[in-house]
Amino acid sequence: MFLAFNASIEEEINHKLREAGMKGAARTAHKIGLGTLFKRLGKQLKPAPKELKYRVLARNAVIGTVRPRSPADEKHCTTALTDLVRLARLTLTNPSDPEALREMADHYALELEPEPLKLPDPQSDWEAQQQARQRAERQRECQRLITRMLAGVQGVIEAGVRQAEEEGIIDFTDMIYLPWQWHLGPKPVDIALIDECQDLSAAVLDLALKCAKPEGGRLIFVGDRAQAIYGFAGADDQAFDRIVERTQATQLPLSICYRCPASHVALAQAIVPQIEARPDAPAGIVEHITEDDLIERLRALPGQALVICRVTAPLIALCICLIGQQINARVRGREIGEQLIELLEAVLELPGARYEQFGDWLAAYELLQVERLRQRPAEDAAPLIQALTDRAAAVRVCYEAFGMPTADALKEKMRALFSKDKPDVWLSTVHKAKGVEEDHVFIYKPEKLPLVWPRQHPWQYTQELHLRYVALTRARQGLYFVDATVPEPDQGGESAQWVVVHNHNMD
Image 1 (cartoon, rainbow, N blue to C red):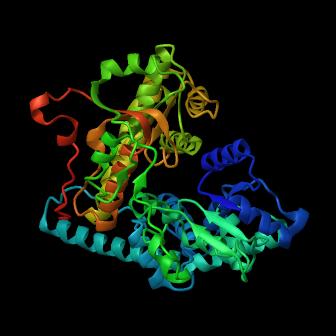
Image 2 (cartoon, helix red, strand yellow):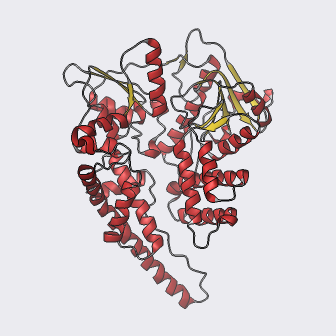
Image 3 (cartoon, rainbow, N blue to C red):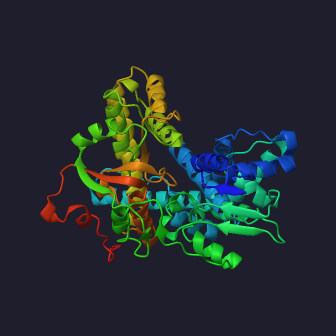
């Protein structure tokens, strides 16, 4: 049995198994979990996940027990409670322990606190005193809402479990959580190989440990600490070491890279010193090119090139540009497209918002959200602001480039950018390039690797370096840094721009 990290890796492994004439099949953890749920639910199980299942349950809990006093607080609490429930299931955090939930929320920078009170500058001492009392009351109200949300997590999860039991309705996370909740596992096999183990969540790890026979079975975990990059999404950033601790595994290090040319490995050694090129590795290509050169390079390499970037908005702008140049290009990751559409819809839900002035309303929405996020501690706010501004920029690019007359028409154009149809050129965030390789890889906006922000948590900075390492090790032949300007040879060339700052200041 092969447990694949995602659907694209599953497809690639199965293709290679068929080519080699080998038995066995790769499946994602979610498919394995879904199979185990049939043991309990049978034909009652609805295989298509209901994405909004827990949002509906969370909203019911907010209305019934959290009881916010305004529509804005109701919407915020619904989103926050939904996020708490999702992460509690992924991390197997005790939902009846408010302190454990609060620690989980702090680690993943969940936005629990509703928007603070906004008041004009006071014109007198009396107004200042009144505003101080109002702010204190608002702060007490916010803390009351947070306390009730934390207390409501267990009830929402229990309601979700009952709904699965009685109606067969599940969401995506239920596929890996409910097997843990109900003590279910797949039919154990002699040998189970688990891919990308450094990015497993606690729920997926529990499922993986049940894949091999208790007596005589073997679990083979394949992973790389330096490629742990999904901590923000519920993965355990210490998953590799926890696996070793729980299983007392024998570690078999593999320091030799069999994919990359020697010049690429040399760059990666600035981050992971122990990596080595294979003895017969070619020198490979490492070049800096301008954005003007990029289009012609991609035109000459159909089906052989991958463009990667740390953030989404530049990829979307580039994809639209390539399509305009008659180059068949797509952005990898349909869920990214759906997130952008959700933001578009949130903008249009603002009171008085009209699509005809969407650009102005998008700017207003972004400003409001950034101001709200800045009320949080800097170390929590910075990554959330970065993610928000990236998504807003991506939506703005689509709106301005496509010029669609209606919101529905714009949504269709946005979905087409993320189609699964195989293009001549794939564009991908570094996260979505995990497990992917190509002959020629172009790193777009290399200055954004790593992203650094004030008071960044050490684990966040470490994962940013991991993202850079992943980016450097995707190519089999050519690696190209797409820069606004190409460095002169006496500036040190490509290596000089990719030296790691090991004494990064978290303050």
